Image (cartoon, rainbow, N blue to C red; front, side, top):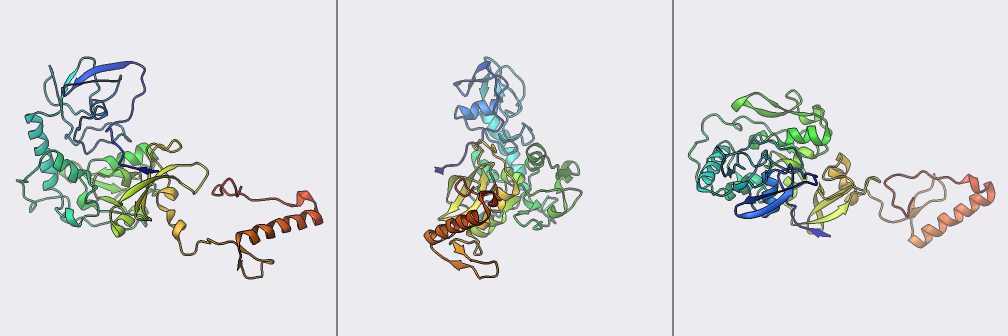
Length: 350
């Protein structure tokens, strides 16, 4: 089944029978009690810029792009951390909000490499998209002074993805995903203020840390800081297909992002009932076996373990297996046959 890009509502869904009605940009919206203004707005088709927010993680409120105005209240609260209230009137698009958002984005871009055309996330980068959404047209601050990418070294120790701290905006998504989704606590924020850095473990390389390569951090990264090596090598996918991981019997749902008939990457599908948007290293990255040149794609038989395998047709292979089962049963009895079944077998094989 072909699927489009999933909608990111910014904050997790709330299950509460009590309903709250409010007004967002002139639209009347009814959502469960406890829902964030951001999720309520996006559910109603109101675009609210965001960088640190994602519906896979708890609200964080650090990027300050999702600021809104609420009638009768002072200031500009973050829509991701502000819950809805009955009768609330929210404005997400005003001249003052536009000015604030452009100023915030200008600071992000002033501390970010300007290599979008050659970046592996080009065309699928949230930072790039949000810069366009807020209408950023110039950056007044130079990049010749202190910045986060002057002496940053790319970490390519992980076999499946790279970590390029030069492109990090310290949104904390990766750290939170490692804690909230995987529970590994392999990532942390080192330093304070402008010296804050995402780091695996205690300044270690990814493969020396507690990282399990589940890919949750890569999946939530809004830039090319954490990026699959397959995307770096092959470029962005052209379309996506909903599928099921074939590694075990759990049945995790995935989006197979494709370029033609080739898989570029496997993304845990948010609507997957068994995994709800998360996966292990096998389904996330170890899918290359499907097209590996050593994969056996034709039936083979041999009479003895010392014989060479011989390719045959499916009919001959099934007939040979059936005849051997009959021979063993006739000679040793029905209890002489047992089987070892893998969780990776299909129902037919099992």
